[in-house]
Length: 325
Image (tube, rainbow, N blue to C red; front, side):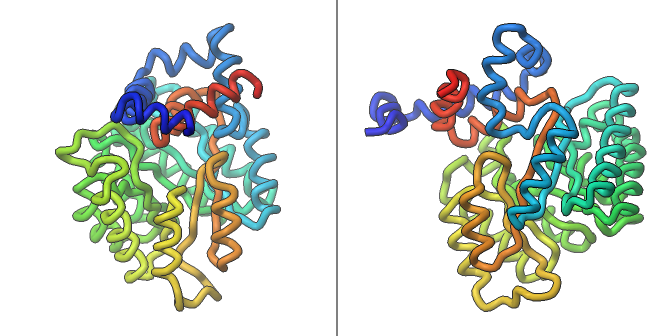
């Protein structure tokens, strides 16, 4: 019996409760700043974070991206720092994204740039986020890179999609992420299919009430993900299937049987750094384009909490990593 099995035997809902705890921790703005800088906890937790985070600097991220490209995968890079509430800092963070785009171009990496709009002003004023996002869109289009916008919590979904829509009036390389968990995605997807730019499909890791979102691990969520995937494939729209779920990967592969895989293939399979290298290798061997999502920066605490919340069993691995085992 594994530790996870024992946890289920002792308390049938323990793991879902652990997941909810980590989702709540991921929303704690105070801990976001305190944990990484704490002289005792910071180095300890960083040992666990390194499994999922390329490093704290852009240079470290570029090194990891080069390795991913050498393995035959595309990459996406994200400089972490969502929910910025300082306008001056939002501007300097936007500068960092522009510099990152230029560094990627100079290195010749096959890599797109992804960001949370709340990192560059959405939590302050959507108009501010749009101004900064346009600057990054201009830099990435000049560099021949895709730009991806992450979806945030449901309370920000309208603002995120509004900024994305405004960018799509001027650019055709700006993609967006959609959450299969949210009931609203069934209505959002047809609108997004009328816009250019890649659509990245994920399950969704945020803490959301079941009145607006399918339960994690439910049959309803699996079916919702596959319905969205089918709509994307039927449209031939640029898309990315971002999942580590072997069941979904197998079903998607079956859905793609017989589709041509030469020329511009509109779909790709994507996993997060540290979570799915074996999955990427399998999908690439099946002839699918593949991508690995790389994050870096000093604000890694919330990101790691969300990764553990997705699969609470990862907590055991995190403890072992922190202990150096």
